[in-house]
Every structure is written in structure tokens, then in C-alpha cells.
Length: 462
Ligand SMILES: Cc1ncc(COP(=O)(O)O)c(C=O)c1O
Image (cartoon, rainbow, N blue to C red; front, side, top):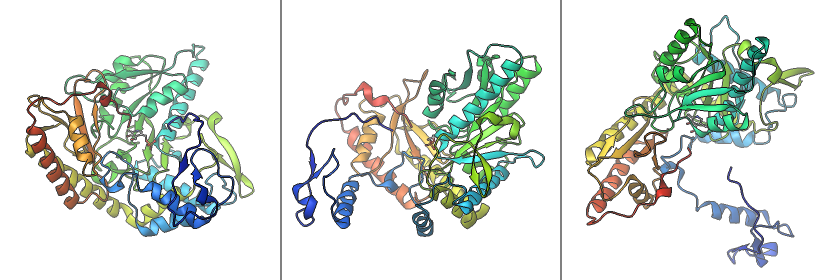
């Protein structure tokens, strides 16, 4: 969350004279609590009107997070708005629904029947990453202590393209991040590069199923095989975590033969965001460990549950239950075939949109929406009068939010635009985007000299 610094002052919200009754008549202070209550309808209208200034979620091609659910799901969420997911004793059916979701995901990710997968819901993939990272750190530390070895310098190996949550994990839990930079055509982690950075202090390697930067899948099986070889050759036995924030709800349905999950023995744990391709509104993620050995017992806390106790692992205590309930709704409402159709439609739209953008002329595709329904594209080197940042700004005029950003080291000189196709991005909407892009390019092509570029435009933290 942004850190907000306290500002003194008496700024007030302007209230339409029609609503300016009672406490609202004198204006509503922005940064202090109003002294008196106001009419509920007036308060509603003030907040509602202010929210109109937010972007249109359907035109937001930057986010991976769900922007549309069926009215029945929205109804269930409103009905469940008062449920606190930690109160297992008070809401045993919500707890049961969460348990079923964990089982369904473990099954989709090929948890082996003879092993006992264990998992939980989280606020999103970031909390899931913290939990998975802690489990790796605790396991590594136990093994090192048992061997009488030092536990001072844990490190984690990953590609530089990982989402910021892994950088956070490393900083908050005092783990050295060892990031493989991008190079040439390689924009994510490979097995060969991963093992080069591993040593006896490596708590784990993170492979991303669906890079936030360009939507490509990291080669999980190849990374696992490289780690197997490292161990067989007498090197450390390094567990693999798969950050399947997006891919965890895509690959099982539309790339069922791709081996990236618990079919690979080295995969210790997997996270996903229920609120991305799990198709739930923001606020739910999942993390599953292969078996109890992968999740150290010291990390587990117990809460009351029907006169007994239930094991939990979370950073938060209280958390809304509605998203977990909405996840279960989606799972039973859509079933395997429903999810498959939705993800396949997103892939088809992404691929057609990518191809249409490539035909406009100045753009070059870096990915084409063949893994996640996400693709990144850049401008051809001969385009020098405008940048991807100008294109992104131009699209904003029509309401589209298409992020532009520079790649991390060593490809800082490559700046891209990225489109995330989600449920609700219809072919018609995609055609409108292509028409708007054509219009924008036609305008920019008329420039007689280059537009000024600001260095601070290049940053991006999604
Ligand atoms: C690969 C990856 N991991 C983790 C995250 C963080 O996910 P969340 O927003 O659910 O916390 C994202 C978000 O885009 C992501 O793409």
C-alpha cells in the first residue's frame, strides 16, 4: 500500500447543494473525521461520486486481477461480507469451503494421492509468496542446524523478472535475493542460469509460471532437471517453488500436458492468485505444499474449531471470507470445462489481438499470448520520434490503460507495452483497441521531430 504522510490542513469535500443537508452543509472535511454523523444516502452519494473518477475496469489492460464476476457471485459475496475467514468455529461452513478449494487445487496441480498436500487461502499471491518463502527458509535452517552448519546467509535464486513480492520476501525475511539478469532473447529464468547461482545457502529457487513482464512461462521442468543434476553431482538439494500467480489457473485447463506442477518431484510448493485467472474479485490467493515435510510444523498456529483446533498458517489474522466463497462458487459453477472455455477464449483473443497489433506496422511482438493470454510488444528500432510511453499516454485519451515500462537489467534499453487479456475482453473490444492504436500511430507518425522523453517514465512495479 502507498505510505500516506500526514498533512495538516482544513481541506473539505465539495458537496452538491442538493445533498448539502445536516453535517454535509458545512462541507465534509477530507483529512479529519467529521464532527457529526450525516445521512447514509448523502454519505453514499459523496463516496459513490468520488469513485467515478477511477478508471474503467473493463478498459484496464494493465491488471491481471478480475474485473468482472457474475451477478450471482457478487450476490454471494455481499451475503458473505460479514464473514471473517479466521473464525473457523463461528463459520464452520466457510472453513469447509476453503478446505474443499484447497483439495480441488491440489488435485488440479497433480498432488500425488500417496502424499498429503497441505495448503490454505491467502490474501493474494504476495501473502502466499511470503508463506512459501518462510517454509523454504525454515526447512533450510533446520537442515543446516542439524548438520551443524552456519545459518547466517540464506539466499534465494530467481529471475530478475519476478514480481516485486519476491524482492519483498527477501528484504523482510533477511534473505539475499540472487537474481538472474535478462540477456539478449532470454527474458526469464532457465535451468542453466539458476544452478550457477545456487550454493549450500540457497533456501530455494522460484520459477514463475507466467512472467509478469511478458506473460511467458519459465521452463519449470527444465529448471527442476538442472537442480536434480546439481544434487546428483554432489551439490546442494535445492527445493523449487512455482509462482503460478497467473498460470496456476490457466495451464491446468488449456495446457494440460505441460508438466510444471507436483508431477515434478522437486516442486515443493505452488502459489496462485484466485483473483487473477481464478476469476474472483480482489482478495484471494492460494498456496499448497507438496506434503507435510515441505511445511515446517513450527510455522503452524492453531485456532478453535468445533471444540477442537484447526491448524492455520497466515500473516493476517482477520480476513474477509467472501472471496474464498466466491472462489468455490466459480469452481462449482464453471467446472473444468467452464474454466477451459474461458481461458481458451482469452488465449484466442490475446493471440488475435497480438497478430493484429503486429500488422499495424511499427510494433514488434516479444510474446504473442501463447502461454498466458498476455503479450508484450515494443517499437521497431527505426521508430525514433515517439516511444511506447507516448503510445500508452495516447491510449489513455480513449480510456485504455496499457502499461509501458522498461525491462529490468540487463535489458533496460528495451521498453515495452503489455496487454493482459482477461475474461470480459471480447473480440469486439479488442477490435476497438486495434482501431484506437492505429489512430494513435497515425497521429504520432505525423511528428516532424522527436517527442521529449522523461527518464522517470520507465519504472513499473506490477
Ligand atoms: C508472477 C506474479 N507473482 C506474484 C504476484 C503478486 O500477486 P498478488 O497481486 O495476488 O499479490 C503477481 C501479480 O501480478 C504476479 O504476476
